[in-house]
Amino acid sequence: YARRVDDCQDLLLAYAWVLPEERRQFELYPFVVHIDGTNSTNKESRPLVTVTGRDALGNQFTALRAYIPNNQAWVFKWLFQTVFPRLLGMDTLVHTVVFITDGDSQETSQLDNAINALFPQAIRVRCIWHAVDRGMNNWFPNCQVNKQTRDASKRRIREDFDKAELQVR
Image (tube, rainbow, N blue to C red; front, side, top):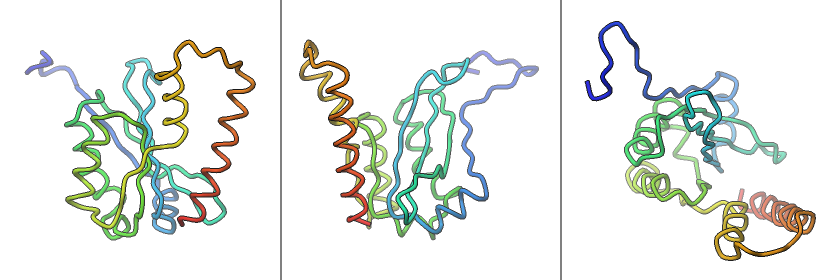
């Protein structure tokens, strides 16, 4: 009613899915979960949220994908407290040790609520890439560091982060 959709029209609010092979891989390696949203990836400009993990060799795999209508808190509450348990399984999620996210306040507040309610064994940390990249843009908007130097710094930070993540696992 609020969207003025009549009976002959369909309305898709959100859609989340997990492929069987990806679910099996997540069941094997549920320890570290990366959550990232990307805007404007489709013709409707819906955000695409990807949930990924890392296997024993450090290779990243996708565990879950979701097209969401917006980045509001209620959407992330649905994603973390309804979709995660149903599609990834609570019996697997109890083994998650850390959730890594960017700095979106709507996302992180709802993930913190879900951690308190459903995943008390886990913690949430901020993605080092987002912290450094966004921090550079926010704190030094007029910085004239050339792209090559900045990319080299990002690579070094990523390598250090990957090593630290392997040690955590």
